[in-house]
Amino acid sequence: MSSTVAFIGLGHMGGPMAANLVGAGHRVLGFDLLPDLLAAATATGVEPAESAAAAAAQAEVVVTMLPAGRHVLALYGEQGLLAAARPGTLFVDCSTIDVADARAAHEAVLAAGHRALDAPVSGGVVGAEAATLTFMAGGGAEEFAAAEPLLGAMGKKAVHCGGPGAGQAAKICNNMILAISMIGVSEAFVLADSLGLDHQALYDVASTASGQCWALTVNCPVPGPVPASPANRDYRPGFAAPLMAKDLGLAANALRAGGVEAPLGLKAAEMYAAFAAAEGADLDFSAIVRTLRPQNGNPV
Ligand code: NAD
Image (cartoon, rainbow, N blue to C red; front, side, top):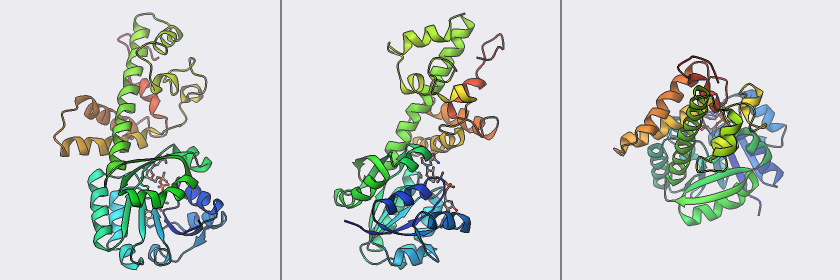
């Protein structure tokens, strides 16, 4: 069944996601603060709205794809989105935001008489364009069921993770595993260098032994063993280091808020923040290996 969807935030991710909703037969009213992005979305069949509130006033579902929690909360509140929407509108926030902000967003949506789902994604811009994203959703079962046809038009998989904020929680837990394992794999290659062990030999053993993980066998941080990994194209992303740093910052916030002892997660957040602010700004997150050096100073 086709729906009328307000889509707010037509950037790297939101632009192609909105286009895929149009492609699946939905009416999409779009808005972004940047006129060029709104014009680009219009070319894909999105109907331009004068404001986010104007789009929401006509929609059954409002999808947001914004940079951070403060943007979502400001848009919902001060900028009048919740007030403009018809009662019972379903608000699906696909942005990656703080778990606490996601829960506050749910509360604001419910207090205004609407329905809410947090549904952050993994899969990057490539997944957004190809409609192969994975959605991690938090909220009620009815809200998840109502959103599923739309999520299915933008992605290949949607997992209902639990109540409000559970989607955001799943996203940061997964990315914390990924960051720690990428640093671990990178340290192992640097240690191999200092011991005179060949990269391919380490790969051949670890990829079929207990060291096996995605960071090794798909996104291998050194050139050679996995030809499709970003290391083979000067670490062009891929999954850019600043995005990993952002997600780890959210994980670190949640660790501190919950009083969780997680030294590796906090250390990974610190390392990626420093890397993303310096030489890693435009690189895939696997390039963190370049910051690790054996004692003799030779790069990997
Ligand atoms: P982006 O900066 O390209 O897009 C965000 C858009 O939101 C911008 O175009 C901006 O103008 C717009 N915006 C901000 N405030 C607005 C408002 N009040 N009203 C209307 N528009 C507004 O970012 P992106 O790369 O598309 O990422 C969006 C979200 O998805 C982020 O939370 C990010 O962490 C998450 N994410 C990104 C990727 C990725 O690979 N880029 C992958 C997974 C998740």
